[in-house]
Image (cartoon, rainbow, N blue to C red; front, top):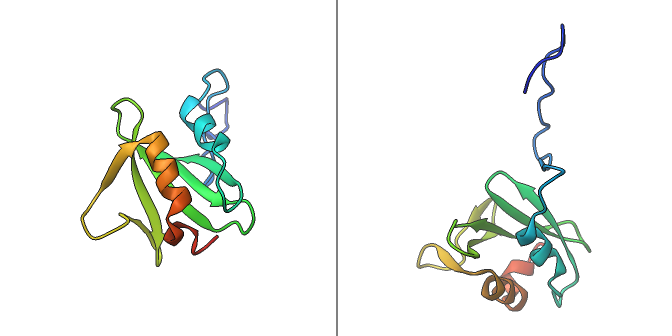
Length: 113
């Protein structure tokens, strides 16, 4: 960021959502529009992906990281104190619609929600 005369550039606050006003985020809009059976989620764009929080409890539900190929995403869940792959076989990568269905139907995503 460019500093104004005598002023240091404003640094983002940790966890702050950084967005550009002119660019719509179609992936975020698709996630937010999904009808989760356990209640709605708040979708926050952070770092290289999207974090889903329960609107009911504020607890973490899932994290989706776009792969850069079409609409495929890596699916992560909150395990103990960090994001991890759901299961014993490494990364779970799938199209966004399948990922949203997976999150909606697997109960372990909703442990903190």
